[in-house]
Image 1 (cartoon, rainbow over the protein chains, first blue to last red):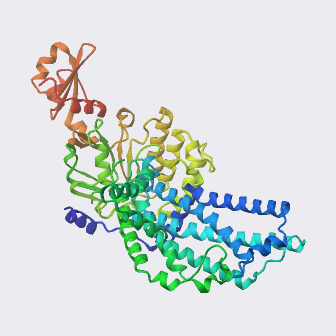
Image 2: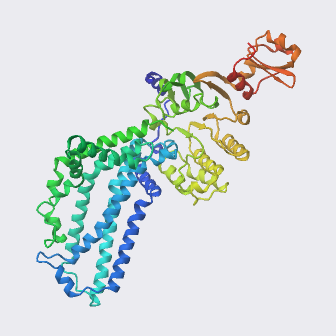
Image 3: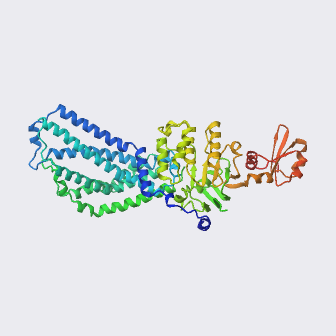
Length: 315
Length: 286
């Protein structure tokens, strides 16, 4: 061990570090998050493009097609499925899907690309710890991008409402049933809470992708997908069972069953999203033991990714 | 004075290969040290150990810190340029300045901007759009603006043309180096930079072949050039290297006095490049 040597030398040459000689972890983290958005521009360009296409589609639809009152009344079921709810769903669904896709590719790339082009040597020449670096990538995937996409969805729903209101004012469509500031706000809060639960539930997946990204020598996508697929096949061939598949399916969708239990989504019994907030089983979801087990696994995987970045020696 | 780098019994194996085999040396502040060795000698491994980029056994203190466990603190005081072309290709010049300013407490952005204004590099360019020489200039601009105590350069001018190489070392010496700072440099182009060094460390097969200050080299080593007929007499004094050039023989001696050798032929201090070749190729004459 060289602790004696290092310790002795440190005692001899104390170079006092002035308070101004440091940059706070918070500021460093913020800088690192910005850095990620510079490098991985798909993270914000893809949702923006999808949003722009949706607005374009809505404008075309509003100009070219007129919904008749008959169309409206057919959809207006006894449970009161409102156009408003449709609009909310129509906005958040495509954005969520595109967000999931770009995040998966981002997480697989963020610790792999820097090793591939050896730029990791530049990043490691800066006084930024591996903890902060990996944390910044997790923060981008689990907080920055989801919040950004949520804000975009919020904006879109306002734009769509505006388009609808204009059409309604022109007498081409009926006024939006169920629309109101309070209902809108409630629906947005409900969406935000769903998003939060989703982030917590999917954290272990994100951490798993980070580990693969920090570990794979090439083709991280294949390395991420192959193990679960192979495990299912091997299990099926060897034992004829589906435990792995069922487990994965549960880890993918399980929490939504908890969050939306007693909420019936389906043909003819569509729910009004405006009342979704009061129906969310938030407490049940947040006290779900599997959610917390998942978070514990996520923490362990993030730790593994940090260690891999710190000690992997291949450059 | 406390050593900037203090290494004792530094060792590292990759599988069956011993990249470093018990290397001990020490680097004092205010020196420019050339770490010189053939390919695969262990230079890069030694630098990586110093920078906390690889595991190793043995004792190593850099600025009093252990690179294995105190890497984050070390990087505030140490700056390194691993190679040309490690700047991320997607990065814009303006972003490079912004990110280093954002995370490095000792980075003087105005200084880097001033240096860049003397080059053809535009702030809006991406690294991938720059020539290799310009990327190195950009990296140098970032490094010059960081007030570090130790600068480690691993083949910083590899693949650059002579003009860029000359400019690089001139800038380093004139704008950066002072008595407070220490530079550790590896390069293949020894002839070009040998006037730069204050100290040289030769490393071969993971072992130290020579560790001396340039002033010491003159006292320790002599190069004797003499006619071939005189060679047997000189060989009695046990040169550790000799080669024939245009019918004359050049021999390298260690620890002989000018009085002993002067009578046999022309005497001078060997260049670092000659000494390097001699040390690496062994002793054909004994």
